[in-house]
Image 1 (tube, helix red, strand yellow):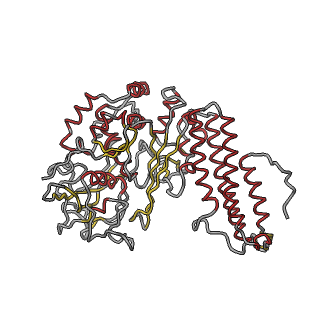
Image 2 (cartoon, one colour; image 1 turned 180 degrees about the vertical axis):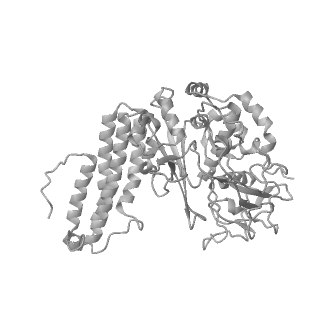
Length: 541
C-alpha cells in the first residue's frame, strides 16, 4: 500500500531565501520565519493550504491568544514554539497520511459508488478540462486522464474541498440521501461562494500570525480540525460550523483518491471518487477572510449581515472600500465591515503592536463560476500593499486612500464616456457595458500599477501625504491622457466632422471628436481636483 505523509513529504510549493522550493508541513512551521511565502502556481491551492492545514495546526499546537497582549508576545518572539509543535505533529501524524487505509487525510474511508465507478483526477483540478467542459483542442479528455503526483493530488484535494463546483454529485454507497444514484442541491465548496481576503506579512510566520485570531474565551472543546475527528464515511450532514477550526477545515465533499503504483515504485493518482459533503446552514460571523454588508430589514431567520462576494472582473483597488471598513473605521462605512482578520490587524496597529511602516499586503482570491455554478470560468487574484496608517481610525491616510479610489473610479468612468462619444462621432453606437473592451478598462491597468506604487510609498513615508497626493494626481492625469491619445490619433476624418445624435427621446446634439476630447480633458481635471491651466473657452461648439 502506498504511503505519503504530509508532515514529512515535500509537497508545499514555497519561496525560500534561495528561491522556489517544495517543503513539508514540518518544514513550513519549524522554519516559517525563513519562508517568504507559499507559492503554488494555482492560487486556490495556496489559499487552501494556508486555511485548511497550516493555520489550524498553529491554532491547535500553539493555542489561540486570549488578548492582544498575548498575540503581540507571540508575534515578537518571531517563531513558533518548537516543543509544542513537535508534540502536536507527532500525536496526529498518522492522520496526515494521504493514502492511509483507515484514516486517509481529508478523505472518506472506502468511498465507492454502487457500480464501483471512478472519475478522472482532473475533476479535482480547476484548470483541467473534464466531463462536458472540454475545449475543442484540449490535449486531454476523460479517456486520457491526468496523472497527479502525490504532491499535486494533495494540493488539488484541499482546493476541491474549498472551491469545488456545485451541481449534481455521484451518489455513494452508505449515503441515505442518495436518490437515483445521485445527490442534488450541492453548493460550491465552502470558500468558493465567498472569495477570500487574506492579510500577508514579510514571511510565512508573520502571515500565519496576522491570520491567527484573538479569542477572549478560547476555542470550544467541540471545535476540532477534520483530522482530529473520526474517519469520514459517505454520510454527510446539514449543520452549523462548530467553531473556527471546524469552519477552516470544513469538508464540503466526500472524496477518495485512488493511487496507482507502477513497477518502478512511482505512485500517481489518475482516478478519484467525488461525492456530496457537509453543507453549512449559515456562514458564521467569525469567518475570518470575507467582508460583510448589513442586510436592510432582514426577514424571518435571515442573518443581519451577508458576505460580500469578490468580483473576479474587478481589480482589487476597485473593491477596496469594504477592506477599509475595519472596526476602527466603522463610522465611515456603516453598512460594510472588513474581514475579521483585517479588522484585528487594524486593532493591533491602533494599539501600537504593528508600526505604520509595516509592509502589510492583502491577497484576494476569487472564483467565478458559470452555468449554475457547475463550471469554473475564471480564477482571479489580487495583491496590493495596504498602509497600516489607513487602518488606524479616521486618519488622513485613510481619507487619501478613499480619495484616490474615488478618483480612479471617476477617471475610468470619464474614459468610458469618451469611448461612447467617439463611437457616436464615427457613426456607430456605444459598446454595451458588458461586452468588448472600452477605453476605461484599458486605463484601469495603468491605474492599478500606479495605485500599487502609491500605496507602497504611503507605507514607507506615511507622513509625506501632500507630496504623495500631488504625485498621484500628476501621474494619474498623465495616464488618463496617454490612454486616449493613440485612439484620438487613429480616428477617421468623419469623427471630427461629427454628426447629430438623439439623446433621451427627441433631443439632439452634436457628437464630434473635438467636443468629446474637450469634455474628457475637463473631466480628468475635475475628478483629480486639478485647476485648469487654460481658460476653458466656454462651451465647445
